[in-house]
Structure formats: structure tokens, C-alpha cells
Image 1 (tube, protein in one colour):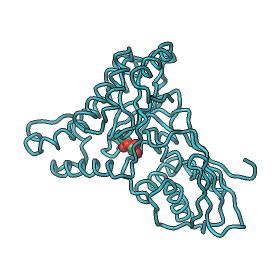
Image 2 (cartoon, protein in one colour; image 1 turned 90 degrees about the horizontal axis):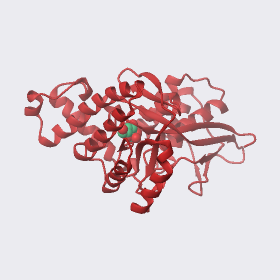
Image 3 (spheres, helix red, strand yellow; image 1 turned 120 degrees about the vertical axis):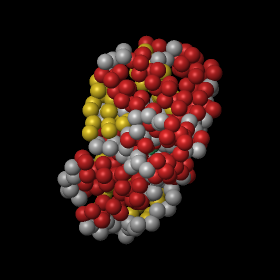
Image 4 (cartoon, rainbow, N blue to C red; image 1 turned 135 degrees about the vertical axis):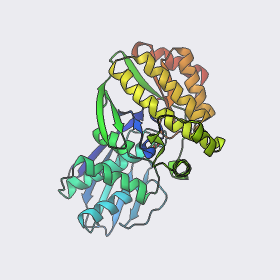
Amino acid sequence: MNNYSDGEAFGRVNLMGEHLDYNQGCVIPLQINKSVNVYLKKDTTIEGIKIKSENFDQEIFTSVSNKKMNDWTDFIKGSLYLFGKKYNLNIKQLCIEVKSNLPIGIGVSSSAAVTVSTLKALCSLYNKEIKNSELVELAHSVEQDFVEVAGGVMDQFASIYGSQNQALFLDTKSNNYDLIKLSEDYIFFIIDSGKQRILTDGSLNQKRQYCKKISSKLNIENLCILDELDDHHKKILTNEELDIAKHVVYENQRSKLGKIALVENDLKKFGSLMTQSHNSLRDLYKVSTSELDLLVELCNTFGSLGSKLTGAGFGGAIVTLIKKELVEDLKMFIIENYPNAKFL
Ligand code: GLA
């Protein structure tokens, strides 16, 4: 688009390490080839901010302030507000257009992509050079402090440092990361259950609060400090708390084993860890749905090496690890058994 400053940011699928980034654990996201583009232009014919989105078929007039509206524009408003604050700018008379082929609300990080692309476009419009680490921090702050969704840093990190043919292993305690090359014969294939989830509904915040409470009961900084749960921990926690703690502690182990499996190209092992992760999200962390469970089961029955829900859960999509040459047959099998499925 002529005369516009633009920013692009890609979504991600998370291969391993679910609900660990706000527990300072290890995660393995992979960028996907679907993105959000945000275009910005000065427009002196308006006083405030005009936001247009093809996807929502909406045009919204607003101004930059610290107030959220509890709708999809909050990630843009939060970006404008915190960017303005960081660089001491009075942001106004701005026309914003959003274009995206990244599905919303299915667990492939559309919120972080909107935020990161808006911040990139703002950097370009206002000629600001920002380090990647600062961009991650600013984007995360939009989500956590402005929109008040309490996820960790995984999505913003994956959008900024990630790659589409290398999995990103990220230790969210130190933010140290490695990129791991993936086999070309296999694919991490994403299947949408058709049931959207909305993260601003507080379910993620609740889980985070729960983890905090458990950590303080155990008198530790965070659950990922533990390598296992012993009798002492088991005595202190209720059964429900123990389940949550078990998921976090053993999911972190799975991420570390998953990294080794990917480096060694042992995809059978990685697939089996994916399915273990799903079962733990279903039975212990309790964020799966019957639709996600069915899709996982169908894929594994068909011949995937493993499958799991991706992102926060509560609906959305699954990711399955399968030989590339089997994907078309898998699609047919899924549609026969789950007609509402959509493929990414
Ligand atoms: C959401 C959050 C992430 C992460 C995942 C669960 O996508 O935005 O930070 O917590 O859920 O792994």
C-alpha cells in the first residue's frame, strides 16, 4: 500500500511446553507462514485514530489512551499507548489498516502478531530503531499490562526471533534460545477444531494465578524450579493443585527431552512426547475440549507420530506430526470423521 508504513508479524504453533512461559519453563514454538500486516499513515483530516480491518469489516474511531475497550482493537490501542509512552510521543491523526491471513482465536498467536506488527509499523513511521529484545518486552507489556491477559513471553518471542523451518527452543527464565533445523520429510500440520476460544475471558489468568498460589504454598519462586514432585510436595498440595503442578513440572521435562529428540532427528520420540503433553493438558491441567481430544485421537489412529492441542487450549487447534506424503490422506480421513475441521 502506497504512502503507508507497514509492519508484518507471523503467527506460531507451539510444539511443546504448554502453559510454561508464565512459569519460567522451556517452550518449543515454530513460526507459521501466516501473518498480520499493519499499515499506518498520517491523516490530517481526522483528529484521533481510525482503525480499519478487512477481517472484522469494521472502521473504528478512537484516540490514544490507557483505557481498553475489551475488543480486538485493544492490542492496537495498547501498542499505540505504550509506544507513545516509551518514546514520549503524542500519537494522533493516524489511519491504521489491518490485513491478516492468520486465523483469530485458535491458538496460533494472532494477538501477539497484531501487537508486534503494530509496533513494527510504528517504529517505521516514527523512525525508531528498537532492539529485538526491547520489542519483545514492549509487545509483552501490551498484552500483560494493557490488555491484562497474563500469558508469558513465548508468542512475542516466537514472532520476533522465530523461524518457519527451525523450531525455537526458548528457556523463558533466561530468554536464552536455540533454533533447531527440522526434517523436510515431516510436517507439523495444524487442524482447527472450529471452536474458537477468547483469551480475554480470564481462563488463562486463572491458571496463572493458580500456579502462583501453588508456588507460594511450596515456598518456591516458580514451579519450573522443580525437577520432580516428591512426597513432601504431595503432602502440602490438594489433589487439584497437585495435578496442576504435575503438568508444569513434567511438561518442562518433556520440553527439554523434546529439544534433544529434535536435535537428534528422533521424530518418533518427539511425537510420543507431543501426545504425552496433550494427555497431561487434558487430564491434569484441564484445558482441552472433547473436540481437541477427538482430533488428536483421529490423527494418532491414522498414523501421525504424535499430536497435541496448541496454545492455551479451551478450544482452537491441534498440531500433529506426520510424514508429508500422508497429509492429503489424513485430511480426507479427518473430514470423514470430523466434518467441521479446517486445515491451515
Ligand atoms: C497463550 C499465551 C502464551 C502461552 C500459551 C500456553 O497462547 O499467550 O503466552 O502461555 O497460551 O502455552
